[in-house]
Amino acid sequence: MEKINEEKFNELIKGDKPVVCDFFADWCGPCRMLAPVLESASEKFADKAEFVKVNVDENPALSVRYGIMSIPFVAVIKNGELTAKSVGYTSKSQTEEFLSENL
Image 1 (spheres, rainbow, N blue to C red):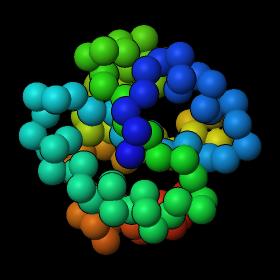
Image 2 (cartoon, rainbow, N blue to C red):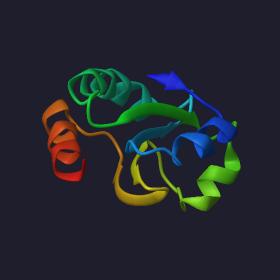
Image 3 (cartoon, helix red, strand yellow):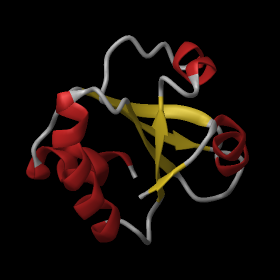
Image 4 (cartoon, rainbow, N blue to C red):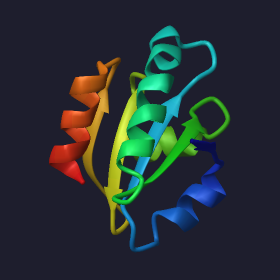
């Protein structure tokens, strides 16, 4: 999964393909635990969405825009709008179920 900044994020959400964004921080333990789960899911769902990561410490305006108070925060964005979110660590099966339901 590519780590992107706010500018690239804003360009990406204008596209036709849904975007799954992992909002994380380097110091966040649950974020580090979720990273390989999302990496695996990004391969399984690659045909359905674009998967990216955004560091909340480096892109605080995005945290404000989406009201992110707790991380990891996984957002599904379609047509520029937040359509689903998952907060906190989730297992591989929970993550895949969330993505199946929301992509």
